[in-house]
Length: 382
Image 1 (cartoon, rainbow, N blue to C red):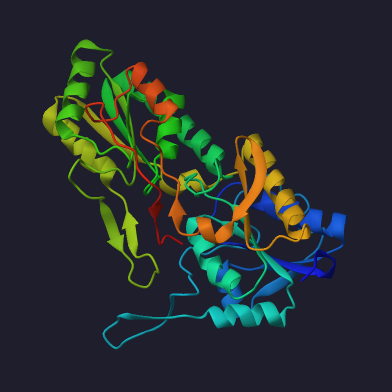
Image 2: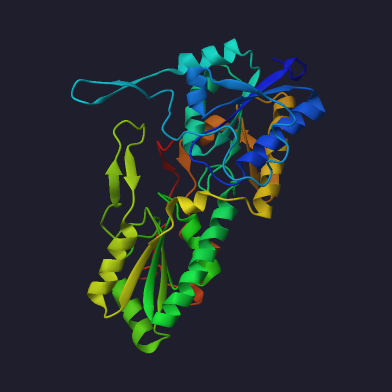
């Protein structure tokens, strides 16, 4: 299909919601409408809309005035993988999964979509992979508050999540100082600790625990005791939900067998708080930010980034490219093979300059200061 023959496109927002989704929808739709005269259709609730043929036309009015709104006007879904879709349950309650990719392809044919713009993270790109392999022209846009999509240096939504986490940590700081307490704050970050690292440094947190650097309970206890006994008498600990003790495993809050990715993390903050209480005389409190990080209006930087990504997605499509993911590397916007990025995560390098700078000013990472680099980690997260 040549660029001149592209007259109708669809947009879907997959995975978890995040600030900036509406800004991207706006940029994609307005660029397509104004610059190329293309009809734009919104696919509701991510891949669920493709499976159930829930698609609606978007007008210029629909995408006006949504730049500052959080969430997504199209709805989203992080439980829907067309290759492994829960269609029913067995008599004993065991979920039965089926490959319903053909239903997605049927919707695309029925709605006469010449291309689909897929907005999401590593799981969403994995879901889009079979569409690309089936010959559908898919252009991906990187979205995730975790900033962990392989192939791009940044994803929209991340900067707003960091700003939210930083503000929360600032507020915990004043309480910790006033009451001479240790405040432990758990933030999102399943396999990648970008939010914890960035917000931790921005807020001046004393200890930052991330999945890429397993922590040692003795090191944590020694650091906190020293800070409480001969330091300022309080401490702020920020921890990613996927952080682990050296030799341990991630803390699971529950398992959802009907989801393509059944593991739900949560509880590591309280576990670390218990460790601190047992090894020191400090009074400890725990706060879990959770989905608070996903909500609210995007900060200015995310609005600008989202606009860039939306424009470049349509420009890439109309240049004749297929199966591409628009990215930013070294502050330059370009595109890479979507299939190469699908199912991979961009983890925090343990030699990252921000970690080095944080260690230099006395920030603890709950270890002895030695660490090894990690390669990109495959994932099934949707």
